[in-house]
Amino acid sequence: MTQESLAIARNTVAAFNRRDVQGLVDLTTDDFKWVTWTSTVEFTTYHGPDGLARYFRDADVWEVLRLDVEEYRDMGDRVMVAGSFHLRGGGSGAEIVTPYFAAFFMREGMLARVLTFRRQEEALEALQVGY
Image (cartoon, rainbow, N blue to C red; front, side):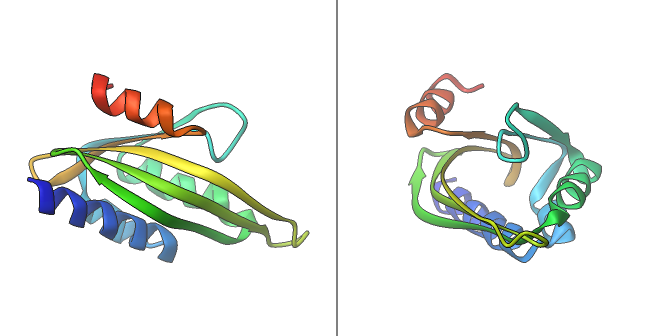
C-alpha cells in the first residue's frame, strides 16, 4: 500500500490547495473524519463530504489557504505530512505562516482520517498509536 498511500496523500494536498471539495470527496471514505486545529484555537472535527464542504465555507475568509509540504513520510497505510500552512486574510491582508503536521490514515485505498497537529512529535505519536 506504500506507493498508493503516498499518492493519496499528495493528491489530497493538491486538491486542498485548489479548494477542490469534490476532488477531496473522491479521495475519502464515506465515514471520513478530519480533526484540525487550524481553523480555530481549539480542535474542530469535520465529517464526510458535508464536513469538507463546511471546512471550505469556514475558510472562505482566507484569500490564500495553502499547504506547502516539505515531507511525506511513508508508514504503510499511514502517512505523516509535514510542512507549512500559509494563510492570508481576504479583507485584512494579514498573513500567517505556521508549521503544519498531519497524520493521514488510509483504508481500502482511500483516505479515512486526517489528524492535524502543531508539532511533529504529536503527529508521529498519533501514527504509531493509530488514533
